[in-house]
Amino acid sequence: MSTSNSSRFTPLVIAISVVAGILIGTFYAKHYGGNRLGIINGSSNKLNALLRVIDDQYVDTVNMTDLVEKAMPQILAELDPHSVYIPAQNLEEVNSELEGSFSGIGVQFTIQEDTIHVNSVIKGGPSEKVGMMAGDRIVMVNDSLFVGKGLTNEKAMRNLKGPKGSQVKLGVKRNGEKDLLDFTITRGDIPQNTVDAAYMLNDKFGYVQVSKFGRTTHVELLNALAMLNHQGCEGLIIDLRENTGGYMEAATRMVNEFLPEGKLIVYTEGRKYPRMEEYANGTGSCQNMPLIVLVDEGSASASEIFAGAIQDNDRGTIVGRRSFGKGLVQQPIDFSDGSAIRLTIARYYTPSGRCIQRPYENGKDSKYEMDWINRYEHGEFFSKDSIKMNEDLRYSTNLGRPVYGGGGIMPDVFVPQDTTGVTSYLIDVSNRGLLIQFSFRYTDQNRQKMLKYEDEESLNKYLLRQGIVDQFIRFADSKGIKRRNLLIQKSHKLLEKYLCGNIIYNMLGREQYIRYLNHDDEAVKKALDILERGEAFPKAPEATAPTEKRKNNGKEKRTAQTYGFIKEDPAEIYRVAAVC
Image (cartoon, rainbow, N blue to C red; front, top):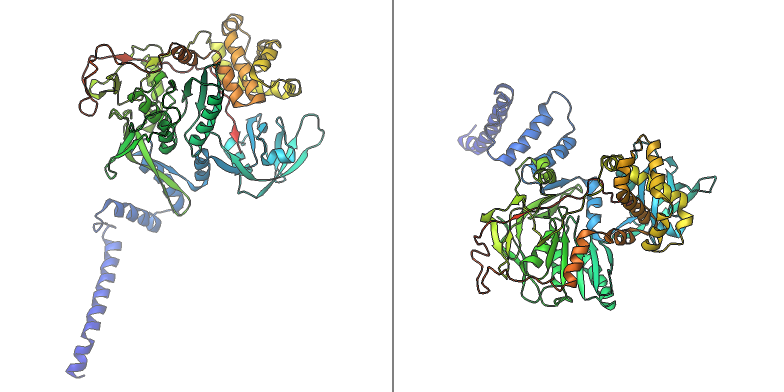
């Protein structure tokens, strides 16, 4: 071979030698080098490599998809309590709670005795159009038996919800009908309201309860305010108790209705997210209306944004108990398989500069979620003097009133809940679910008699004449809870309250139920008293000079103060029903 031909093949020979060397080296490294992964430097590469090694070499067959699904929540749990992974099968349900609507058959139901009981039928919805009624029992779905101990709310909703326009066939048992009734229902859009109640408490003052902050909350609030203003509303109570939050944008739009132009509502800031501020634009419809905001330990996130903005701007009075303490902002990030994460990207701060996120330890979510137990054990539910605030996290409002970060919104007026009447008998029948079971059974058996009562007041008067508590005691006895006369006498009023309330809910819906509870709600009474006395707008503390300015973005040192809050009665029953 000539020299010229030899030089022409030299690059090819070198390339083949390099490839052969890589292959041989990889073979020996894999089979004789102890499977060392020395070439892996980055942590993300390490995770990917681990999954590859498991898939390639683990002794048993591993479902890698299932392994990743289980690992995702655990990884995020190491960050903070509010960064979460949402599997694809749960994402639609999670989103629908805040989006304002979903596609389903249009009924509210509870599961009693292993059977779906229709609690109410949504007006104008698909089920009402085909003739379904409150009290119906769904026992067949698509020609298959749909009852039994394995029946859960989640399973029911997966089968009853579905794409708009799709159909589901139901077999329904109805009182008075010998045979099952067959209904074929075409699923449609079902509204999800977030304003659960809006009405006048008396001739002057209105009440609005917001259950969460969703896509339609601001519009729902505007409708409620327009209705109340038409009825001569001169002052307002916004009830955010047990409101776990939702969209921050919904909260800022709500606050905007009550603040004058230029007032800071909230700001957010994170490692990768520069400070973003939200200000009132001056278009609010209730900028001068006296305002009370009710909060408790169940008020979180967007609820705390609303309450914090009102408190720090001295716009209204906060009444109730210390709120949950969630000051972290999550961003939704979707994956191609339909799953998603909610990743914490920033903290939010109230106008005074405080972050109300309570302390947490990464990877110890259970302790964080059970914080209310610690509050209980430390006496926070029984005495306002039981919690010492961190003076390093002390800030001031525009008027110089002290407020604190690091653990929820502290109310301006603390209202403990009266636990008089709570006994071991009441707790026992409550914990076993007997109050709800009896209430549903009574409603089911007496529905026709109660149809003529159109409001909670008239229905309650009827129920009080029926000896509801005595009927319940006999029912509880049949379920193994023996009569204990002294305890029953002490708890009689509470038993009556819970039983009548649940039946009112079953017959008339949530707003009438809320009206009923508010008649003797101590926080509502206190809020009304403040409005009546014309003291909804806070005043500067006497010890603070009016010209004093906030320091360090609102942070100042002053003498220590203590606050405390009380948990809801352990026996209190709130009716929980699913909608599909």
